[in-house]
Amino acid sequence: MAVRTFGHCVTGSLDLIGIVAICLIYIPLSASSSVPEAAVFRHYNKERPISYGIQLPEGRAPFAFGHVLAEDLMSYLQEDPHGPFLNQSVPLVKWGFEEDTINEELESIWKADWHATAFWGTSKIFVPRVDKFLPSRQPPLRILAFLEAFRQVSGRAWSRILDGLQSLSRSDEELELKEIVRIFCKSLREQSHFCGVEAQIWQGGQLVMDSHTDGATSLLHLSLTLGGHRTLRIGHFKERHSPYRPQDNRRRGRPPGDEVSVWNEAAYAQDELWDIPQSTGSVYLTSPFCFEHGVRYEGDAPVFALQCRFAFANFSEAQLVNGQRTGNMRRVAEVVSDALVTAVDKIELRLPTLEEHFA
Ligand SMILES: *[C@@H]1O[C@H](CO)[C@@H](O)[C@H](O)[C@H]1NC(C)=O
Ligand SMILES: *[C@@H]1O[C@H](CO)[C@@H](O)[C@H](O)[C@H]1NC(C)=O
Image 1 (tube, rainbow, N blue to C red):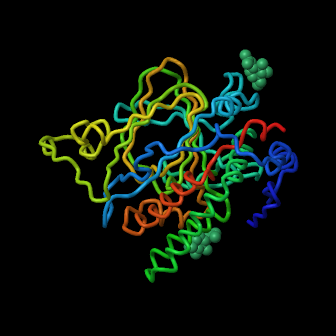
Image 2: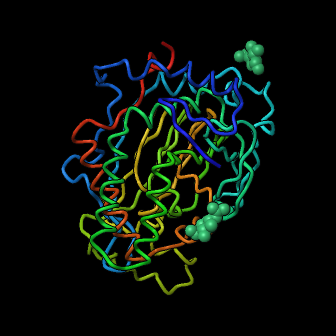
Image 3: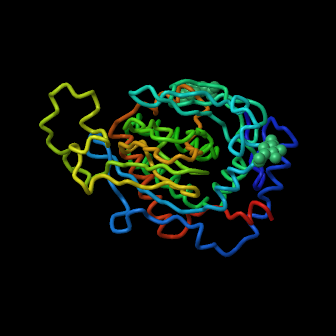
């Protein structure tokens, strides 16, 4: 399907009302000249903006972690009167929510997979948590407009990644690397980063998600906490060749994966685990493909969160990259993390403001 971008408006097989609504919501964006400081992403770890995660061939996968707090904006997204997060008068199934089992205790939270393009109706995208190509509906309009506006105001950051990937491809003869780079470049040019949206609702109470790393759709990942509180735990290392801690308990019938689980405190030195609180308004941008992580829910209030990833529209391409834990992917991750660090340093990564949404 041909996708054309006219200024801020993406059109294709379109529903006129949807397109007009989106254009109205964010047309004034380019008119803003001053960058509001509050909306700018900062490094989580200022001393070492690049950290290292899982072991890949030739070393650990590097990642950057940028974050920003935007309470008003995230509440605005939650309070969309037509969306599923405000009150229970809109049935969750209408938005495609299903109960999804997320840990070894077989506990589940509500999840929906949305495709944030201006195409009305349903389209199929690759859903990494089930490793399938599934029809996905549009998110509520406020979220759709927010993601489009975010891609736009932070456009230079994506250009940096694109430039970095292109020079990586030029500098190397390996065909498999070129193919992976081609797939990510195509996805960036088609503006499909953050288009694969996983909406999550946890009704409140204690819950610990299993430790894991994401697939390649999360090489570039935006996480939004619209309401409630949760804690993200990340396992990270200072150096590309940092060793794992030796563990006595490795052979004592521990479950597979436990030797790298972020919940197994014997697996990490104290300063190798970050607990990063996520409350209403918390936003982060990083590459969870690259590091082991888990989420803990504790409060009584419900938690509404969105995980925004690449939406791969071609199943064979999605499958080619998604399971890869290779040296090639490590090099792609290197480009992404370097570009993100530069973009944060140069104040190119920021959220659109509420005024820009409304004006
Ligand atoms: C719940 O949502 C509906 C719209 O679907 C709205 O009319 C109603 O006022 C909302 N109720 C509360 C308590 O916010
Ligand atoms: C999907 O990607 C593969 C590999 O690049 C290509 O051969 C195929 O034509 C693509 N399919 C569609 C529908 O574009």
